[in-house]
Length: 352
Image (cartoon, rainbow, N blue to C red; front, side, top):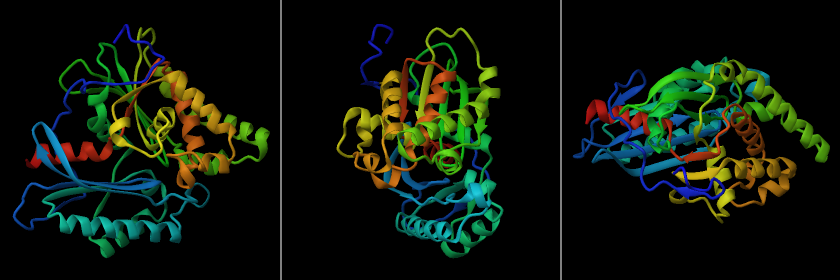
């Protein structure tokens, strides 16, 4: 790929390597035996902004998805100021979890794991919410650490890293935090060399510093967000290796998939076109700048952003640009996969 122009997006013909399927699930695993098919697995990822479910069966070295669900629930809405999950956010999330529970039953899931991340880690009433969710839906949410969140994301998406010998950086921009993982990809399985969890995601950053009226106000808000993220990532930036000839960078999050869709000019989101895409970093910076300059109404009118993401996408842009500052790759790999896929590979490695 060394002679390929960095100015044009392209797709990898095939992943650089197969993701490993070994590992053992920890707490929060629910064993359910129903029906005749004992090989349906499920992974649920409840983040600060989204509730996502993936149900799959083993196929070859990987798996085939048989059902999926994703809904923006904004569980962490207002958390930055109150320290609590709001009643409205809890109701939205419970409603989504009930849909997930119904899918788990109908698909005869054998083994599943449901995890919760930053919002439940941070909220003072997180344990109370977990208990209520289990009582009303039968889904036991495991509140995982930031480190396990980062490792699951790597396990789920690292096969899309471009080939190379030097360490690569994988990042996951969430709703309440951003995980960065430096990995060695020379072996059959990725080796985590270093990792960092920054306490800023698209929801927490927007609520704390993302509001400004008019062109000057929006520019000031974007600068504030960039400064906060830069400060939070400074310890990790200081530890990163220097002198890497061709930095490799892979992102997994709604931010990068949304910006990739805008870059491609898609009329609606299409995972088949986005997952595995390689995009020039300069193009992502340009789109980030353009979105930061738009007002809310203008962003909401863009395909693949809409009203659900219009208020949060700029915070994601600020985080992305900060990552590009500390790891100046010419190209950015896009992954529409992560924690759920990492969970599934662990479950299947343990139970297949």
